[in-house]
Image 1 (cartoon, rainbow, N blue to C red):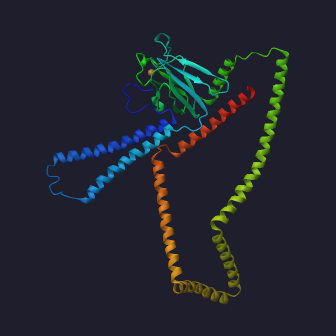
Image 2: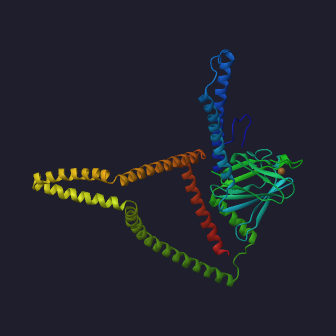
Image 3: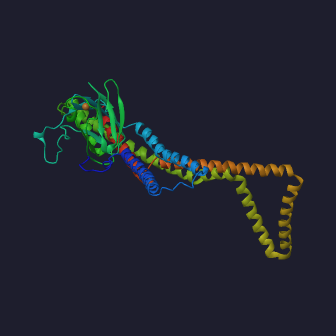
Length: 412
Ligand SMILES: [Cu+2]
């Protein structure tokens, strides 16, 4: 959350907010450079009245001061556009929270877990019920719960007038419009409680409908969902003989399933090991050699064998082998020269082909350089950070699917 006297943005709490903050810093650095340069020039002109008395025309300077601001604008614009689309894009989220704005409170719905339609309202906590450590006018009675580093989606809509669901530290702001569904990505970097406020004037109590999100580890999140599910289903305890039989059968069935699962997993691991050894150890290298450099490999092998043979010959009779070697080298040069002289057309064609080929590869290489530069410019976080985030995301996704999947296998 923000504090009085704070300069700059809040500490980022989501993956996208890190990018947004870096974009902000990047923009500020460019701005600082422009301001200091323009300030310096203005200062210099103001103290020197004769500054431009001899400076009448310079074409190159004009070209430069046209191109340079364009480059600066591109440097500011490209990362911004890329980030804009990144923030808009949501691919296959694992879980959904439906966020509905009301006059003047928020309500949250968790309904994508099978059979569970869990929803609650989230009101501002009155001053009288604040506990120690609670923030006045920001604390709510029931918080919106999300999982940390899990790809979640928020669907934002409204019941009456336009509201806006915003958490500045996570770079989230989505308008809640009646009859429309806006979606936002919720991917918090770490566990914690994050605050926001309604960001669209919605009536007299606009200031009193805060947003409070509690990000928890994925295990706690799934536990929370399953507990709510149990409560909603109103499960009764096992009390009859039939229920007992069913319970025993269920556990036997479960044990059997687990055993089959384990055997299957081990067997597939065993098969996979052989497959991996053959595929990566034999097939891939062979394929690589055959498809990319077969003729070159063949030629090199042939040359090596011939050279070794020649060395053997040299040991036995150095004079003969030496003569042959010199003759061979000269004959190769002669063949080359003869080719150029007798077949000038083919030779020219070969030269032109090589030149075209090298120009083409140069273009390809520079295109590659430019595209990698653009892609690196559009993302400020380094690969190490991305890798850690992706690893954690993958782990959490597997955990989530595993826990929820197992739970609903039993409670279908
Ligand atoms: Cu509102």
